[in-house]
Amino acid sequence: MPAMLDYLDENVIGGDTLFEGPYGQKKVIYCDYTASGRRHSPDRRRTLDMKQGEVYKYTTFFRQTTHFRHEAREIIKECVNATDDDVVIFTGSGTTGAIHKLIHALEMGGDKAKTTVVFVGPFEHHSNILPWKESGAKIVRIRDTKQGTVDQDMLETNLKYYSRRGMHMLAAFSAASNVTGIMTDTVLIAELCHRYGALSFWDYATAAPYLKIDMNASKLGYKDAVFLSPHKFAGGPGTPGVLIAKKSLFTNPIPGGCGGGTVLFVTRDTHLYLQDIESREEGGTPAIVESIRAGLVFQLKESIGSDLIEAREEELCRKAFKIWKANPNISILGSSSARRLPIFSFLVYHPDSGKLLHHNFVSVLLNDLYGIQARGGCACAGPYAQDLLGIDESVAQKFTWFLESHESDDGEVHCKEPLEIMKPGFARLNLPFFMDDETVHFVLEAVDMVATHGWKLLPQVRNF
Image 1 (spheres, helix red, strand yellow):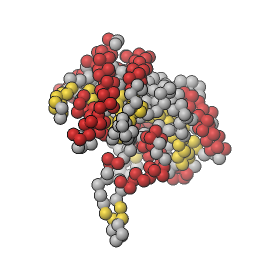
Image 2 (cartoon, rainbow, N blue to C red):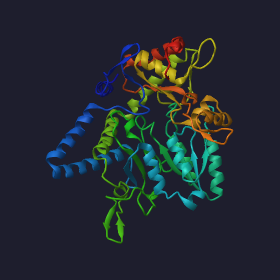
Image 3 (spheres, rainbow, N blue to C red):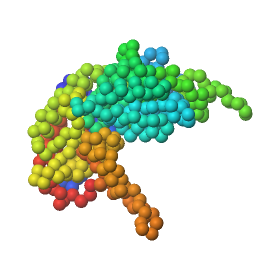
Image 4 (tube, rainbow, N blue to C red):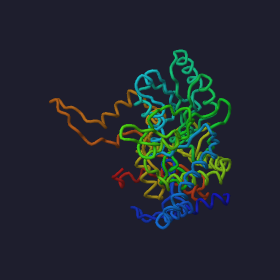
């Protein structure tokens, strides 16, 4: 493995963590970077040094940290090929916060929402569905093809239909699925959207730590906005969400989250907001160290290079498919022919009955037996998960019975604890590009072993 990847692997904080499980002491093997990354020692030391300076040299610190924060913003702009027409905004709660910031900038409420249609892709995380739904706009979900990628024909049909009706059109797609890792050709989709006058928005929460982001790839293949969560990067925990967007989108006269730092002058009766978008859209005391760290993790990714990362990830996908597809008890969800990141959601079958082992049981075994940190569930992408599991809408609605309160014959509503064990799902893990080959092999063999023999431990595991 290249020296740079070895360096990254060796400097992950907590890489040697041990825990006591039901089957003895295990070393933690973290395979959940799709949810959140882990801290990186050099970046942590650099930000701690800056924090220490605040105690002794406040004035110097104020000037220096302001410069560092500006530099972090410029690093991100350079990494994503932004121009003077693009802004980078740091915003609270990851991708979710960035999407809400964008919706506020677009002034989506009221009558405008009634004349707006939002096309969402097949892979979308709830963060890229629910805010658009709650805006009041019409939502059209574009399905995937048999090959597992976005159905461009369906998208174009809908673009033609709604453009003829004079609707405002927005397209919000994931650059890569957080369930299957399947990638979307962002330039091709953006070009298609722009040909019909639609805006092109991209959820890079899953893809950003691994794939190149190009805000201005071609004349029509540019991105109007990108939202992402740097906490998913190697070294990323403790960073804010990031919104990268065209300045022209910010038509809102009142900033999102107005308050301190967003105004030029305030009198007893009037106030005047700043004109600079990046300043006016970051109200309140900024997350200084956190946003500086966001710049550092982008810089770290850039120093490794997207080409090296993508080559390594293709290799990891090949390794996983070679071992797991040979096991009849493992069903890897999603197309095996589509380009994908090494993010794997899978089902495990009992060999004799053909019934599924519960996804949380599989995750518990990976943890207790091997120290592997995976997760069970729908990965916050319910509609796509239901597609993959073959659950149609009528069946999906039946699952809600286990999760809602119910009214009895006497008319009283009896609340109950949601039976979350009944929620359909799968086990998911990912293989980070800097994981060494020995550990990769260990993880692949562990999943293979659980799929073959895990059912034998059903009598021993009570809580999942």
